[in-house]
Length: 429
Image (cartoon, rainbow, N blue to C red; front, side):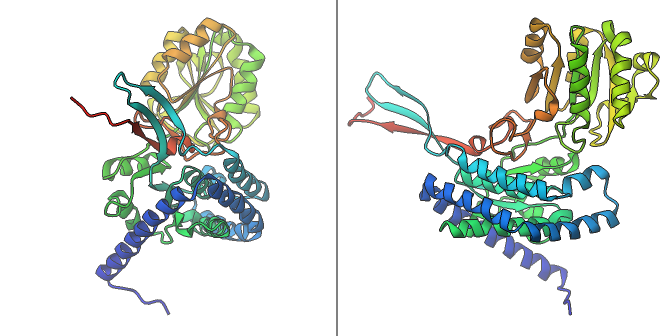
């Protein structure tokens, strides 16, 4: 029999549970920082082993989540993010193993110098402390986030989406078992076990000083809530309104391969291109080829007036330029040269990832220098906007803000630094 607690009692119980998580995380963060890099590496390797061993249980839990999500009627893109397969679980485990092989950032000396008075100064990396991560229906984030936070000697409190709770719980248990195997406190990785949205509110208030930073990973509404309500620093991850610009000097074969991959490899990831910009000087000759390749691969096209005059497609509205479809839909605009492309990106982009396709080195360098986004690319698919592809072993998200971290947030970005000053008895006159 389920006993329904009065609302006040329920709120008090949830508050107590969340604050206890904060206390446990603070104690665990100190322990993992003191344990040293070899112990953290051993724990990460044990986590990868545990995830592989737990794969059948993860698949069973994920099947429950997938069935519930289908009944709920969530979108195809969200289902793709939620689904785990044997291959995806192996990739998750390998990602944790890859993080284990990364250099431990804690204690890295970033700079040293000596003052005229003989004081030796250095800037040294150290852990942030306790990190709260709020994410939606991607259970693999449980493993990525847990591993990266531990690599940087942090403790983490994870709050995944309700759709992925069963999957995330089994993954988190495997990660905690790996910590225990290596002799580190299990509470260095904690998962909020309730789907109650009030738990998010407790995280955003900082758990009475036990939480040092919050990282949101999800849709616009989630990120907006976190940024509006958080009482601790936020490493923001906004939507991926990514652009691929086909410059007048683009190689047609490269342009076709890149845009099809950038849009359709996986439409539910934040690095998927949502708008293709094509130079007016080559649009008549090249746009039909690109449009037919995209349509043949199952992509719906929405174009501005000039694009529709060249190839039949649905009329794009202003809303299309600001929509992260996360679906096989691509908006297309014909632009007047690189100036027009950069102006469109500046007006409508989310400062996530933009790519230029061109054989003109000078144009490419100008685009890379002047476009103000977290990631800018030349002759490459925007689907490479991923921490694993950057060699980070994974990522917490793609930070699009301007404070602390920008671009893929890996272990290095989950550290802070302090200044170490060594003297020989100097006093200040």
